[in-house]
View (cartoon, helix red, strand yellow):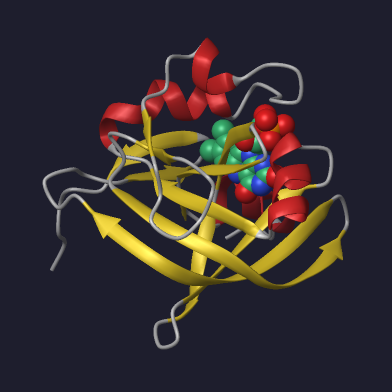
Length: 164
Ligand SMILES: Cc1cc2nc3c(=O)[nH]c(=O)nc-3n(C[C@H](O)[C@H](O)[C@H](O)COP(=O)(O)O)c2cc1C
């Protein structure tokens, strides 16, 4: 096995695909991001958001975001939201993203997702070009009929086969 520590983000650590949405005071945005849970009880998650993203600006102002865990039908959306900057364009309008109101935060829920995890930031710290946010889950809804996506080796995978 080769020592390839530079490949950790691309190859050696498969990860969840979320469509992170944020919003406040008439502004909103969504970006593709990975996330992981930190604790089940209390329910805590962590995300790392680039300082140059518009989502970062909205999270800083609102202290909130939603992790819309991407379903297999959202690959195109994950690609688009991960490749466009939302400061000057409303990605929801431009890419015709269907939304609904969240229960506990001002960020919109993205319809068609596997789950919606509503989050409020508890703590944050800078690392390189990113801000790492530790957040508490304030509400969570899941559509068990949908299949979540994973990101591995620069490709999207469907997580619908149990291995025993
Ligand atoms: C699969 C995938 C995962 C990504 N994960 C992250 C992430 O965890 N953190 C991050 O800052 N950017 C991540 N990105 C890149 C952002 O989605 C991208 O910079 C986006 O254009 C930012 O949009 P915004 O400026 O509208 O917020 C990811 C992109 C893809 C395709």
